[in-house]
Figure (tube, rainbow, N blue to C red):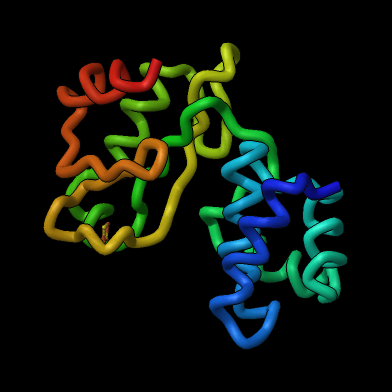
Length: 154
Ligand code: FES
């Protein structure tokens, strides 16, 4: 069930568009920001609220890698795996993060602190290899930078 606060935020977003469909991604973000991720129940509730089919919302939610359809840790690290970052060492960066945190892509640390995910080009190719932590851009990131960056997210 959507909360009153979520409904108000979604109404405000919806008022900026001609159709409910145009507001879907931002509405999903409202839920994700409030709950950390978008569960099947939340997705169905949002579909009801926007008067759209759950399968349509599901297709969009699955398409956008920044909509989390599974629970995530307190902080989400998204490492760009597109061409520029890949050429500049993204694979190595993921390996170092994984080694430091003891997780692989798609996994969450046992203490629930971090989730590590791949993401497509962040539009920061001039800062490759780039990554987001909780939507904050870091780049270029070298393995030597990791300890300092991760320490920013307790
Ligand atoms: S390829 Fe990584 S930010 Fe563009």
